[in-house]
Length: 90
Image 1 (cartoon, rainbow, N blue to C red):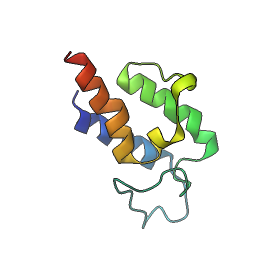
Image 2 (cartoon, rainbow, N blue to C red):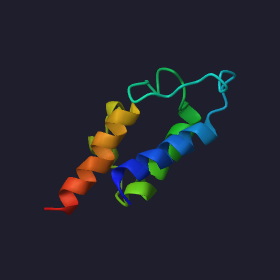
Image 3 (cartoon, helix red, strand yellow):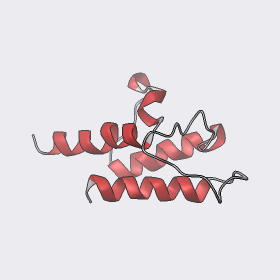
C-alpha cells in the first residue's frame, strides 16, 4: 500500500474519531495542527499511535518520539510513510 493510501486511512481514522461540535464545517488540511486544535485529544492519542504502528508495521519508540512528528498530516506522511518507503528500497 502506497503512502497516499495510508495517509487517506489516517484521515479516515481521525474523521471517524473526531466528535467536536464543528464536525460539519471542520476541514483538516495538510498543515492543520491536529494537537493544538484538539482534533486528536489526549484520550485518543495513544490509540492513534497504535493505529500508526499497525499501519506502518513498525513500532514507535518513545525514546525518539517527538510530538511534532504527528502534529500535521504532512508531517505524519513525511515521518512515517515516506521514511518507510525510502528505507524499504535501500
